[in-house]
Image (cartoon, rainbow, N blue to C red):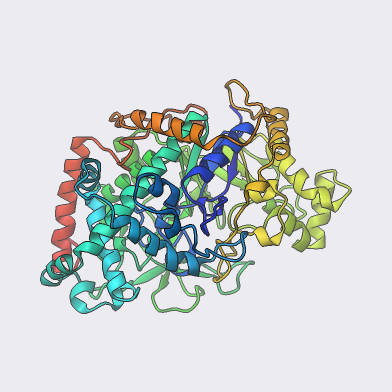
Length: 580
């Protein structure tokens, strides 16, 4: 089945509170997608952002971003008063996220809500029990960051940085209220997330999530589990991740993430990765893995270098990781981000896993008719075609900034006389391609210029800020997207949504649907439930795979016991300050 999707992050949703939220604004966007005949909504990582506001550099691979917690939902639950958040100036530009204001005010509002929350609530206690494997460390980590004025963990006092037992016992006692605060935030986040997921799936819309391959150095993952990474005795990275110099960057890209100790992961049966992917495939219907080529081989830069010019390629886990994942989780729905320096070995791993790779049309117009990103050169239909990704310029911006050679070739290839029509024709080329799934950034359907670019790699200060307004999502736009899906056989196999129906849903109708669906959200995933290997049919075969509404990850008892054993090993290694 041919499918289609829209790429837009939660942060870009319309909102009166500085950044997109998991409430009515998100549900209204889902309604728009349904009216447009869209089958999949792709987002960026949902994890808490750190310096630079990038969702790919997070304090945790497991936690949800508190910025996205909907205040109106908290008000409806009795935790907030309208004046406590509606009178705040969340920013002067409704098209941009002001992260300074969001940071300064969001947690202030959430603390007021927390002060009214009953921590003896049975569902909350159930959540704490099920998520204790990661939540206890995360909540303490965030409490300690606050106590240390936001400094990275490796700049904390020795006892806390190295997790010495006495220092840890004292910290847990001293900061118990802050630990509870960060735990409650995760409870609220996942409660609201699964309500939104249920609403999406009820509209026959799949959610495509995104997980970065690496964890940030300043993260609870590295602090609490140093044995998982290539660190020295002082827990300083031996090497960090990056990309070597190429035609796009003379000095390469220095990401700075610690690199996994793959020998240790292999010895542990890849348990950490299995748990991470089990969690991701519970949260999402399909998961995009960023920098997939790093599983075949990775570029390691000695720690302390200021550029990525000096580094070595080292072998990754390869097939053994994905064999272990399949044995434990069955066949899960994955999209592999296979862009950049792709070797025959990387292609062989992609073929082995059966995961679909990516084709980005913005990369296609270099004047070479053999370019692999041109639709006639797609070697398989089992791929995902994009107009561009979050790291690319919008199509309108690309037309304005691309070289004359690239624009001329694109006009010739697309039979386009007027350069102003190129963005529409590139969308048409993606939708008419043989790719199983066609995806465009929402900015491209909105015909937004350079101001709509989400991220420019290797830069900081102006990224991840793009926002939309309610007025962007018109009936006319829905009709056009619906027409494209209909014309290129990408409508869902269900009673067709009529794009000309009203896009405005009554809020009480939407809330009633959500409240009714909460009953269905109590179902725990059956052990062993899976989809065919490497498939993306989760997009067209919706099951409400949502476990308990308050529980982001439900696993069978055997898995939980196995992880408990692994955790004991982790803590044993942690207490010695080295790998176990």
